[in-house]
Image (tube, rainbow, N blue to C red):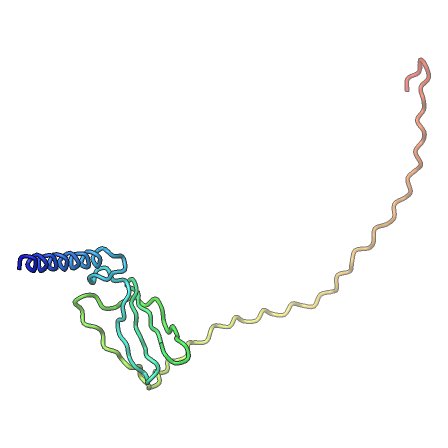
Length: 153
């Protein structure tokens, strides 16, 4: 009977240690498994279009991304959407775009067109300058005279 009590106590201690280990693992792990504060990614909203395709709004690090998944391939529709809803606020209801044409605005006033410049009077054509006259040939240089002893050059 004593051994049965010791076995039950040992089993309870072992279960308590396993429970404490799991709780510590979830709180200290980096994947955000324990609690809301550690989560970086999550699905905000989904909408089924048909049997295969879904629209999914995913939030990662306080930035939302809009995806179309299923079918032949997945498609990123819009990325980098800042979240609009703060904690405690009600989400904004979806508003369908109006199918009526937008009211027409009056056309902008025409720009002022500058008046044309008056035509210039006809003038006599400018004659080109005459070609330069050839210069007279220069005289051939004379040889220098060599000074002899006692003469100045």
